[in-house]
Structures are given as structure tokens and as C-alpha cells.
Amino acid sequence: MAAKTIISRPIYGTLSPQPGTHHLFLADAEGALAITDMAARAPGGFFDGAEIVFIPGPDGQYVAALEALKPAQLHIAPSFASLLPRLRQTLTNAHMGLRLYLAGTEGLIGQAMQVALEAGIDHTSMQTEHRGSLARRMQCVHCKGITENVTTQPATCSHCGLLLLVRDHYSRRLAAFQGVCINAEDRSEIPPMEEIFR
Amino acid sequence: MGITFRKETFRDDFTFRNSPEHIRRFPFPFHEDSYMYAVNIEPHVVGPKGSVLENLIDVDEHYVAEMQDRALVLAEDPLRCQSLPHMTLAGWDLLELLMEQQALGYPEHFTLTRDGDRWRWINRPLGIDDTFTFGDTSTLPYGPMEYITRQSQGDFCILDQRDGNLWMDAGMVTTQADWSLDFDIGMNFFEWHAPVPLAHEKGIFVRALKFLTNIQQGKPARRLNWTMTINPRLDTSPENYHKWGPDRTTVTPENVGDKVHLRVELQSFWRLPRSNGIVFPIRCYLIKMDELVTQPKWARRLHRVIRDLPEELANYKGLTRYRSTLVEWLSKLDDGSPTSPGFGPD
Image 1 (cartoon, rainbow over the protein chains, first blue to last red):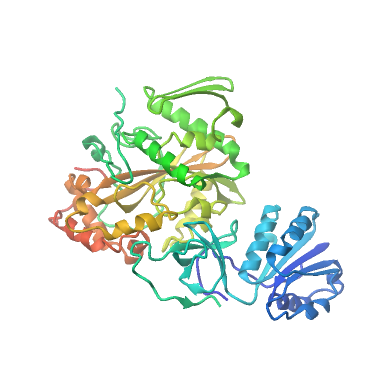
Image 2 (image 1 turned 90 degrees about the vertical axis):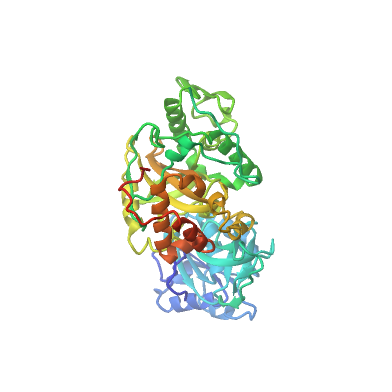
């Protein structure tokens, strides 16, 4: 987990079963393990009212483990972008009593939370658990482009090419950390690039 | 007699200057020879004639030029002015406040006449004479917040109050000291202040929030904040940091007096009557070192403040690259004699 940092940086917890009539899980890659760990603590029949939307990692693991929970619905999606229309529709039609559980990479948690916020769900009511990669989703403050899966410090903006300091300052609305040009004052200063968000 | 508005620029050839009267009214932010964060909030009441507090919303000789610079920034980057959908009523509150205050303080330049919801606003310096229906956005060329803040000096943040917190849900921010409205919009008080060093540990923001959420209508409050800017540039946004950042490498012992500017923010806090929001005007005053040191007390004090500033603060304020050049230059104007208490020049 991340070291001590600033207040706008999200803090993630451990998924725990909430009272409610409908449970919607979104997870990617190792996020599946947060769900299966929680299942061990869930009351009997908990997953009868649950929908799991899962984006497997490149190794395709954990689908069978989620199937074994026998959720009311298990949807496997190839990417976050591909599940977006479905997620929006589900949240639009949701009733009181829907509980949201987000698990996996920060990018997945952040983007799912962004859609849920737009649907009017308070961020403090969502269960989150970080698992897997520490790769960051970063917005370039200069060109406004989003770069996905940033693992280095500094990082190159995939849109405008500026070399950016990846800050801990985080916007839930944008689901992104802020990237600010690291050598704006003197472009000839090129700090070494280190892989620190693995 | 009214104000003589200067023709000047805050970019390219940087012709911004302060007249001798404006140098003496500059809101020098240090009341003693050192600086550390404090919850330095006080009631925003009218101050001495000839000071920046003579009126609660100050209009000065830079008004017209600042509004022209704002229009240039907005044309390049419309995201500097944003308002979340629930903030329109607060925008009308702000329009009322700024029209009333500017007309009250400067009747020769601004006139507001009201006939029920039918309002007429005359802004002579900018050549505006508009009649509109208060509360009906379709009768203005912009939303109410954007309309009036294109005609008012300073940045404006409108904060929504809910869940015991303040939320940065609308703003016009074109003269900021390196923070991004586009990134911070929608954040609560602690989140948008997250990058500020040292102050969280001191409990500054917890106490400040408590104070601000209790502000009452008709009883505004204020505080001063400061930083330094190279060249009289209003738009020191993070968005354009890669464009203005290189200025910081251009300071030499020969040009300190002309290039280095003290940048003071007069921040005030007002409860809005209909929306129960808080508006937070951040009025920016610039003064170059050559102008500032015409007041010997300020020269001595600024030398001591910058010399003794904790390194973390100097870094946060972006002074690191030219601090030693500035301190060396100022040291020649400091004979070590004591400074009188208080902010003003001797």
C-alpha cells in the first residue's frame, strides 16, 4: 500500500458485506481476491443478490474463483471502456439499497467511482479495496490529456510529451492524479526516470 | 474625480507599474520581521481612506488592464471559469454583491439601478450598459458568475457548504498562484489544500474551516497571503507553468529590482444570502522590488523575512532558484536597524 501522503490522496479499505438488497461488485485482476476474501466473511446467500463485473488481467486468472461464488450475475468485460455503458445503465436504474464494492487497481476504482459520483452516489458510501498494481491514472495539467497506467516518476505525457512530476494530489471528479511539468523552469534538466508505481 | 486607469500589460512587454500613491497603499503582508503560517483571519471591515481597505471590494488603477488580461486568458483556456450545475443561484448572489459593492464604493464609475427584478448595470470604465432580469440567465451574455467576474478584479471561488465542509464548486480563476481550478473543482476544503506543506500538521485548516463555516451574512472576514512572481504576470497558472516557469531562471543581480515582484493576495470570505454558499475573492496585488524598497521599512523587513524563511516554504512558494540573489540584493538595503510594528510604511 501507499506510504503516508497527502489528504487528497484516496485511502482504500477492506471490502466488507453491507446491509442492502442489491450488491454490485466491480473488480479488475487481483481485485477478484478482495471479493473472494470478503466472501469468506459474508453471510450465507449473500451473493444471491450480487452482480460481479470483472475485468481479468492479462493472465486471465480468477474467473473460476468468482464463478464459484455463484453470484446472481457474473459479467466478464475486456476493458473498463467496454463496461461503461452497462455500468451507467445499471446505476441509472438502481433503487435505494444498492451497495457498491470496488476492488483492484487505483485506475479501476477511480473510474468506477467517477461514474457512480455522476449517478449521485456519495463516495463515502462505497466500499473500496486496493489490490494489484500501483500504476496511476494521470491528468496532464497542461494539455489536460489522461495517461493511463503510469508506473514511473517522472512520467511522459502520452499526449503533449512534456515530462511530468506525478503528484499525490488526486481528483475524484477526474479520477486522476495530477501531472505537472517537472523541468518547466529549465528544460535541459532531465531527472532520472524511476519505476516506482508498480 | 475618479480613478485614472493605467494602460498596461501583464504579459509580453510587461508594462505594469504602480503609481507612487499605489505603492504607498500596497498591502504589505508582514507585520513583523519573520513569517510562518497562522490562521490570520480578521473581520473584513472598512479601513483607512487611501488604503486598499477603503472599500470592501477594491477597484484600483489596474482595473481595466486586469480585465483585458482576464479576457485573453479565458479566450485561450475557457476551463479557467467553471460552475457546477447546482451553483447558479450562488452566481446570482455574487453578481448582486459585486454590483452593490462596486457601485457603492465608486459611484462615478459604476451605477446599479433596480426596479424589482429588472436591473440596469452601467460599468463606465469597460463601456458596459446592460439591462437584465435578476435570476434569469437568458438575459445575460454569460452565466451570472462569469458575467460579473469578467468585470471584477481578483479571482473568485464560490464554495458550497454541506456536510460540515466547504466544496470548491464554482470559480473564476485566471490570476492564480499556481493552483488549478479545473483540477480542484468539486473538492472539499481539506482536499484542495492537500498540497500545502506544514499547515495541516499545525491544525491550521481544521481551525480555518470551523471559522469559515460559521461566517454570517453581512459579516465578511479576510486574510492576507503572499508569494513572489517573476515579471508582473497575473496568469501564473499550473496550466501555463511550462511557459512562465523559465522566467525564474532569468533573475540576475542587475535585474532583481525590475523582475522580482512581491505578490500579495487579499482573500476575503462572504456568506451569500440565497444559496448559503461562501464566496472567496482572492485579490492579487503586485509590486516590483524597485517600487517596494522606496519604503525603507519594507526593504529591511522583506530582507529578514526572505532570508529566514523555512526551506520547505521557500520551495513551495517557488523561490528557491533566485532566493539567494534576492536576499543579497535586499541585504544592501538593510542596515540592521529595528522596524516599527505593524504593516504600513513609516
